[in-house]
Image 1 (cartoon, rainbow over the protein chains, first blue to last red):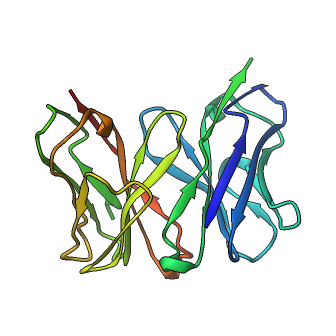
Image 2 (tube, rainbow over the protein chains, first blue to last red):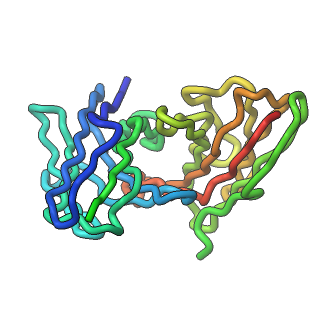
Length: 115
Length: 113
């Protein structure tokens, strides 16, 4: 069984401020972890993924996430927020059973960036 | 490559009607999945396929059927639509060689009256 918890359904930051979106997971085996971004009325775009290589993963648009096994966390960060970062962000976990293609998503975090 | 394509983009049905949501991918991915997205609930897996001729149920399969006769296509059938099936539906594909990264289509917004 696998699950994802995203703390904070809405996060608001000022432009230029640090972005921190929290994600905790549970998985019965070694997890694959993903962050996706969804802009209004669009599909999901992959930001970054962890697949048991380096624990600090760098993604697109300046985002990065750190896998911490002891804390079962995979928080998403960006040093300086930009207005274009406003979107909904989803953390997801995939186990290696069942072909590894069964993603379990968190409920999402809506990021608002203010001037 | 067109990636993952879905048709239609929008659909309105009456309760009890049936329809098929189309999904196709041109990346030769072995895995394909269907998800539904509802406000405050994230995306939930409906059905998935690990190859042509092989499908299985996900978290919320009731009211939906799938089949996969080719690698490219993975249609989702609603046999008798219900208002509870009002949602945005996303199809995704992935491959083991790509580390199981799922690539999503643009979605179908379905309203059942």
